[in-house]
Image (cartoon, rainbow, N blue to C red; front, side, top):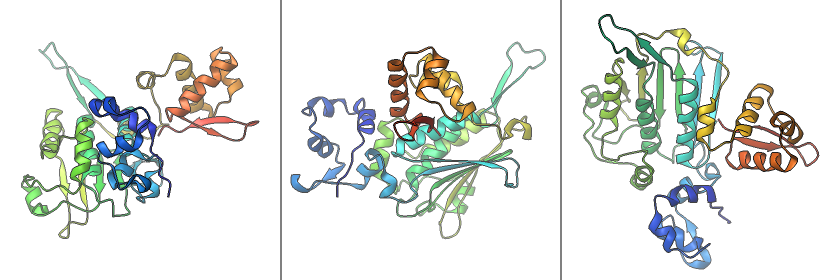
Length: 329
């Protein structure tokens, strides 16, 4: 069986494991994966470990079915038929980053409230982003990859549910969670925690739940609800909306990625213009890119190739009828 290691994923961790990458001979992938402890076995039969597949294989869902993040946005509080669904696949840390980028661009709203006799206005959010980030990372970290169930994020006008399977390890129970006790230090995926910590996505010190509560409190939001069942088959975090927001603040609109977010990905002005065009029209061709961006064919080809490598666009069709559609979820 041939295992494909994602060069993009390897590069994304190069900054973290500087010493390992510098000391490794150029293109010595076998030596590198051994140093990272993500593969083992003799040279003639080097096989990836589960952690290697989850973080460094571009198609890890082929090995771990439903090991993705699914976001569903509903138009009302009862979960009507009117909803938008997004599925994020690929390396785990990329799933988290893309899911959070999507939520930040399409769900998070800020309000400003002036207070009589006070110069500085109050600022708050419908849902504090840091609380969502912490809850989502915890769900990815603490789920079981033997369970064929995705991490689910269900967004309603008045709340957000983040759900993973199974539930917390003993001795944490529904009763202890209701009392705010999350002191147990048993981790289902400790090696995964090491990578998430190095990426700055997790602290792995049992600080996740207190951070969620603290962030919600500072925002003036209602208390978070943590829930599991007697058999610990699931773990769900419910984030209620801030009281100053209403249904209109979370109504479903077309997904959007604003220019600031797109520039943060390293896109140039031409590419941002092309993304905005595709979001409206559904796709773009090389010739259309040249026209709307006032670019040469070579520049258009280079920009479109870069957008594909960044996983913003996907290439569709054959050589004669090639077009580019949105891939960034």
